Length: 466
Image 1 (tube, rainbow, N blue to C red):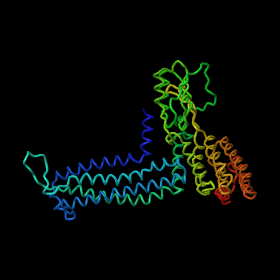
Image 2: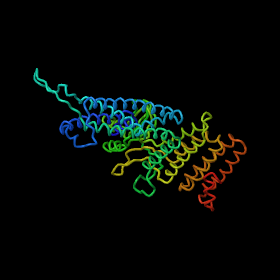
Image 3: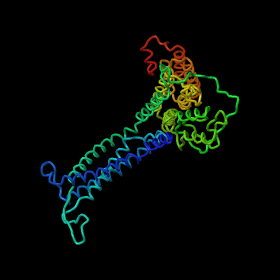
Image 4: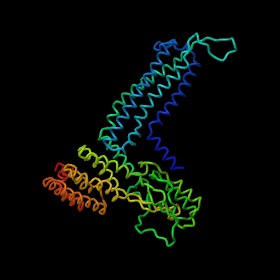
């Protein structure tokens, strides 16, 4: 149930209908409340406020009709502009970035503000009555004529109009700002760093994770195999539910997939020891801990965010776009996230229950896998561009300052060597020599992080000016 709620909430956040629907329902409720308040206080109170204009029924109708017509027209234009911006962003940065723009709360609130104002005015408009209109359920042949103008509700409508104008001004600024390449890459980069901080504990947090154990899990008895029933991406996973399920039956559950993986029907979803523990109730409990969907999401899949930055950079370095500086921005944010990961502790594949017994085996992306996603996948695009190749080599060298583990620095050195080999084959002799020179300094720094004695020279070199 928890995983389904997480998936449901993620879908709501990336929809253009949820927030506008909530605002529309709120506007309907507010219209009933405000008109009821108008009926309770009467209409004489207007005479005590000189700055409040006492509308006649005809004027009130015309005023509310004008607002309603204007708001629905602006809402249509706003929706068209939003769709145009989304189309531009997906063609420029990649279709997987569509979800990021769909999750933009500013666009959702803007659309909801105009629709809510439109609905509010319509609901208030229906309560305006002229003096010659009958009202109420009266006995046959009896009629009561009275006029009604909801002055307080009209004042609220004026306030909504002013608020909608402010929202429109914000929207005009927000749309071009949201599709700016620097802001797009910064948004994904910050989200990636935050996800890493959530998934990987700081090195000083002694009790945050289990002790690392490289020995493979082995049992002499054969496990039971639970196959997947449907195809799709694993979006959310409740590890705590699996631990409780395994503990209740004194079993061990090994997960064959992790969030972000595509699952095909018939493939083993989990393996369970001992085999006899897997009955119908346990199978139902295990399946309820998984949530699948048609696309990858960033909820429990930090690799997906790294893939987005790689996709933007790869498109930017394509011959059709040829924008190495957007690719450089993506590499900066990737290096920022990897620097955060390098200073955190790896997570063991083994999950224990409260009694310290092994219950779940689940792999988590480590530093080497992140480096392969970031630098390995980008290298074929970067090695043929002089500016991008030099910048990546500088970032690999700069990582020596924030990578305390020698094994992690060796991983970075291997990527630097692969980049140097690729640049030698793809670039002209002069550019390849510049990359090779920078590669020599990078290897020296990765072997000895304090290799630069002159702090000013080091800063100039790492920033590409030395």
